Length: 366
Image (tube, rainbow, N blue to C red; front, side, top):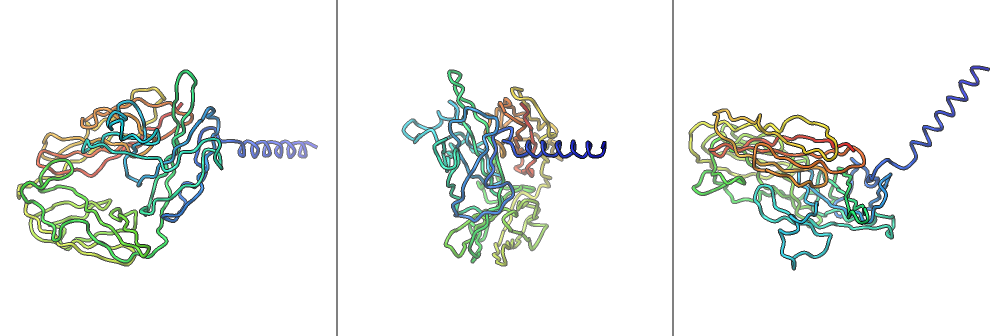
């Protein structure tokens, strides 16, 4: 009798767990496309969200980004003021300054959906035709708080975009041959080419569907080789480094296709080791907390002063202060469940050598 009672209680417990697991999620969540799924570049898919316990949602906006692209979607007075009034098309256009160049950057929602859409707060979503490799879909939900105004919550998934066409040719989008070290040539950080400088080369592929897609990132299937690692060294994430003077040939390969680029380096031969960026350790904080990102442990082998550049590459955009200082900061936003924000740090020494990027994740809890 006890065995039957135990079995019955176990079945009831299992059934309750099953019912709870099929109930609505605790917070706003993208349910389609699924995180980690493969989608076709240029196709139209259906976006679906589960509102969970987040009540009062009036609109959801969707944005596509490359895996490492900065998130440019948070609208506030300071961001909106960057663009002249006549250039702001609607509340679905966002603008703010690029963290490195300071130039205005605009992000426009690819879909803006309300409760009257099918499915509610979702709908037909066009995958960027240029997308290839890991691609982020960010959904930002606007919640009405009556007289208190609005607040936003977000969810984010990474999908793999795959062109439904064969790669035909690869090309380096730069002058050929590439001359490094000429007077006046600058890097993205405003420093001339020098020993130890780390840089990226824009590489594109033309596919059979006529679309030219950026394929610089190894995540898109691209690999690099240098004929002389003592001249141009191949680093992680498709980055390259000036290691010495002379000539070298860079070869890029993707999907069975190849292209080559001759590089002639003529820089100051003074030895210079690139600095190392350190963005600190991952952490978890409470909503409303002032969060300080510390790059103070970044270092330079020669002990030179460093230039800093912080940017955000995951999560709905937060106003990031002191992006060119050793310690950037932001106010942890309100969240319904733990959400992760990822930040990138690169440092540059006085001679122009750049570090590889360092990353830090900040998880914000309710």
